[in-house]
Image (cartoon, rainbow over all chains, first blue to last red; front, top):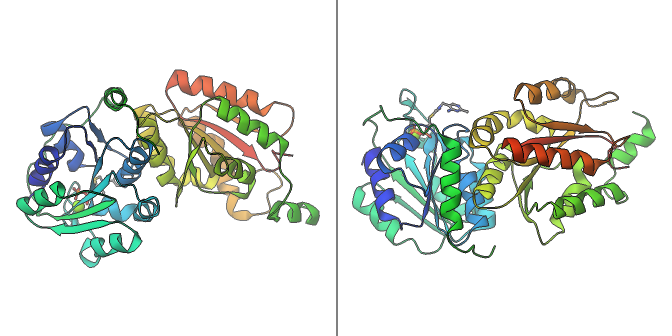
Length: 190
Length: 181
Ligand SMILES: Cc1ncc(C[n+]2csc(CCOP(=O)(O)OP(=O)(O)O)c2C)c(N)n1
Ligand SMILES: [Mg+2]
């Protein structure tokens, strides 16, 4: 499974009013170029914070499910966020890590995810649903069978693929578009 | 720092603060309904008031960068976020402020304790203390310094709320030790 598969399956197997928050680098850029939508938030800088932004959204608007697409190195940069998620246990949060064992957006330098078991870690800190998937079908099934969170999916991914995606530039417009999308439905209780 | 002052500063269960309570009421009237951050002794009254108020969704963070991400998410979901931290944490989170809050135009109000000023007895704060206002100015963010004397704290906050709303930027209130007495 390649990054292109993960991005495509997340964008097409989630519900249309689910929020998608995507991490720094090629993950955001590929989602933006191929599946840009008002429900997407891109985190082009502040590497690691995608799961914190996703948690903030999930806690403040429980009417939407929030799907986070993290990177392995990005997650390692903000591991404490998993503990925060485990302590708050938002039912509407699905945390997916695209684990390619590398800083793919740089020059594919190795990360340390090879010696970490993210799924076990997630269980240990309080995520309710965890799975590790290695192909398109399994990823799709895992997303479709996600009922109550917080959920954690490790998507084991190969390196390679396109690198010449456009970058999200007009972040204030993306913000306004996203906030309009969020305000179209009544807010859930916290 | 005198022994008496040091004892008062490090005490766990000091007196409440009328000024902190007034600030809290003003923050609530201004519509802030989400708070996150990392504690500092200088901010203890602010944090206690936020934790004790059911109108506020309070999500503690493990480090200041996380708090910036949480505040951004809360804002995107329609909340009005407050972030509290020590100025040491402002440096830890500086890239996150610059690369998330600024380009997205997220107006979070940041209540930041200002260590490393005159009379500081903790050497680890001296370098960041010296650089704090330079950092904020170089980011072009609205800020005010409050030390408990002369100006009214709610007037400072009111100016900051106006600027952060108009400029779509985070704004910072620097609070010096002793600001609440
Ligand atoms: C604070 C910070 N340090 C470094 C970078 C440079 N950088 C951009 S993407 C990236 C790699 C991210 O790796 P990972 O999260 O595993 O995602 P992948 O690129 O593998 O898809 C790095 C290091 C950055 N943007 N911000
Ligand atoms: Mg990676």
